[in-house]
Length: 165
Image (cartoon, rainbow, N blue to C red; front, side, top):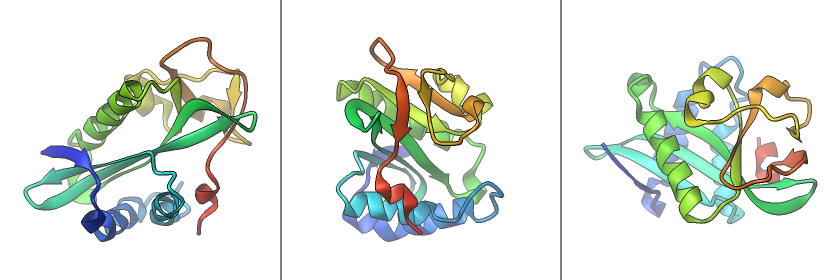
């Protein structure tokens, strides 16, 4: 498996993959593919990596800037992460997330946030910090990973693309 930045010829495959990956997820609003497209169209898809096996794209991860108290502070949001359904639970998502976090650190980002399963994202070092909050999300599911200190305090805002439908 190779992990590389997305290319323009990957866009349709990423859209199909993302739609398929979230199709049967009860927690999903089924807007993840539209979110990725909207982030890309807005120039806010800071990191967009694909996992390729042979000639097939089997995974994708997106990172985009977030604000804290309505200010850019060098923090990013992780997601969505998509893996083709027949390739899930094989480490593809983990590899994509690790590489994306490494990219953020090379960019001198201050940190990253994610809304998701603490059992899964905890393995990457994400943890809940009451200083950072996101809307009405249950606090245990909204987590951060700081690359620098101190961790800022306040409300996190995602790009408007996350309201895509």
